[in-house]
Image (cartoon, rainbow over all chains, first blue to last red; front, side, top):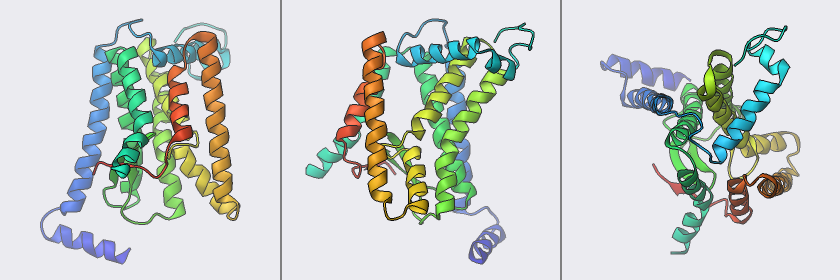
Length: 87
Length: 195
């Protein structure tokens, strides 16, 4: 712990984060941004019913489960306990 | 040559699954799938770096990808790192269900949920296998190696027959059949290092 503290302190003293720390931050941001971008592009290219592969079929089965299960619908706020609303 | 062939065979489950997905899924669904994959690995990466480890190495395995630290991991650290990926996917799925609307949100939640669940199955070097290994080493150290092989074979067989049954009944689940069949034959130690 002390060694890491001294290493990071000396890195700050030299005027920057240090090469390793910079790499870590860059990688974290880059991977997070990649995931976000892929999801965003998927959202903008989404077409209803366009996919009929196995992921889409499995996803629709999970969708049915969540939609038809009243307790789950109430938990996620799709319906009130009286039964109004839809996902 | 033998080593290269073994390593090539080791990556076959993941590569065959990818090829199958490319042929059967829409571009938007594929992007969603890869977004979930990267988000899962981001979870592991966050755990590695928050625990103070250096940037981990990335390698390709039969199950997909694996991040590994050059430094040895404490059992507690390994627990958090293994949990982080599925946890990130699960939280994303729950957030989409709670705050999202429409079929995209439901599909997003389904894909992330599948990722979380799929990674908890204990085979192919998955997070589930690492968690099970930690649990068995902690509580049943003498029988850990044998028990891990037993549970691995049990889950794999169960997964294989469920996929086969689903394919017979509904015509879907073929990728589960292919995936589990390869894992029944794979060499676990053969990995391809990316960086």
